Length: 293
Ligand code: GUN
Image (cartoon, rainbow, N blue to C red):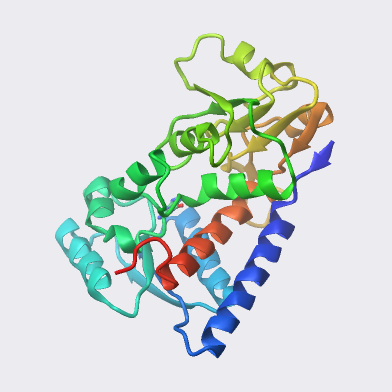
């Protein structure tokens, strides 16, 4: 069994990005600039956004954090999005989700200029991704593809089961694993209403678990020699931790790991790669790699 070290891989990629930024700036080019909008004080969102700002520093990017209280109106938030759309210095930006109940996340996502949508959530980017055109690909599936590539894990022609059908992970992951230019695999998507989910998993060469249910994938669901990618990051109470919680994956790691060829741990697997891929998308935005104007 080989552990897939997302933390080390992410550190290496951030160093590669920083090197490229240095060259861009040395040649008189513009330092990439990422802006983030954070609404309210959700603990998870605070941590993610803080880590995104730190990652920007590590990559040599400029970053701007715009904070608003959770009583901001939808109209006011849409006006902030519009300001960022029109700010020529900002190459890309994100609106951290979830948003308060009175604000339509979909409306906000669709208000973002798709050319600055480094999260890859806008329907234009999602649609372009689905038909294999250049675009921003959302960070978690992009990070998983990068891990599979860097660990030389064969995906072409393999059976891949994606557990979960969220817009952010499950759906784009299944799309990408299916496409010739990325995974080139035979893909099955399983979800809460799937019959024979265990059987599907047992037949899989690669399982990508993104259902948000701690310890859902057990040893009896995994084929000997499979690769298991764990996207779960549920906060479970843990009195022994200073924070009062720990992150728990969707995979029962201790019993599943011995059966695997490759497996990602939680934390330190997919998580660090997600932020790192946001940095890659921001670098692409700075270079106007996908959209020229
Ligand atoms: N909330 C959880 N994951 C994400 C993400 O990748 N981007 C944004 N904007 N919000 C999130």
